[in-house]
Image (tube, rainbow, N blue to C red; front, side, top):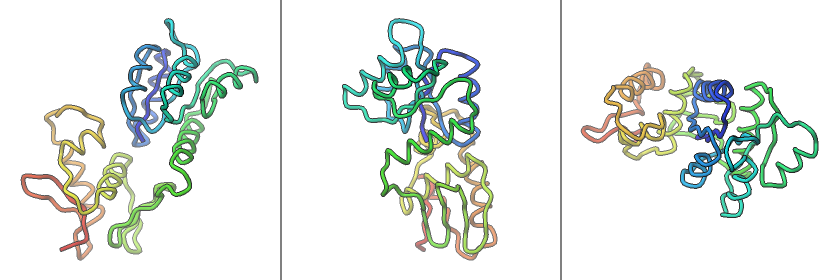
Length: 226
C-alpha cells in the first residue's frame, strides 16, 4: 500500500510513517497544504491521510474539495483534533471517506486504511494470490507453500506480493526498488539481492521445484514453468 500523509505535526508524522513502514507499506509526506496538493494531484496513491488543519492558505478540506472536483477518487482518511459532530460532517461532505480524531491508536488507523483500500477496489478485488502451490492471502497476510506455513517479514511479504502479481514476467531491479522500496533512484546497495536471497530461502528451500529464479542480466521472475 502506497500512502500519502499530509500532516504538519512532526511527532505525529514520525509515529505514522514509522508504523506504516514497519507494516510493509510505503509513505510519502507533505508538511503543508501546498506540497500536499501537489503530491496528491501528481502521484498515484492507494490512500491519503489528510490532516484537517494545516499551516498556510490551503487547509485539509480545501485540498480534498479540489481533488474531488478534479476527478481524483483516491480514498481519503481525515485526521483531526476537532471531534464534534459538525466538524465530522464537514469533512465527509467535503469528500473525505473516513474521519479519525486525535489522539488515535496506530492499529485503528491501519485498520481504517485497509478498509478504505478494500472498499475502493470493490467487491471483486483480488485478495488471494497463487503460483503453483505457493499461496498468499492479502487480507490475513498468511503465506503457505503446500501444507507448510511460511513466516515473512513485512518487506519480504511486500516483495513476494509484487513478484506474484507479476508472475511469469521478468521483474527488474529498478522495478523492485521503485515499487517495493519506493526508491526512485539507485541507492547503490545490494538491498534487493539480500531480500531476494532471504525470500528464496523461505519459499524454495526444501521444495523440489524452485519458483523464484534469477534471469541473467535482466532481473527475477516467479514462475512455475520449467
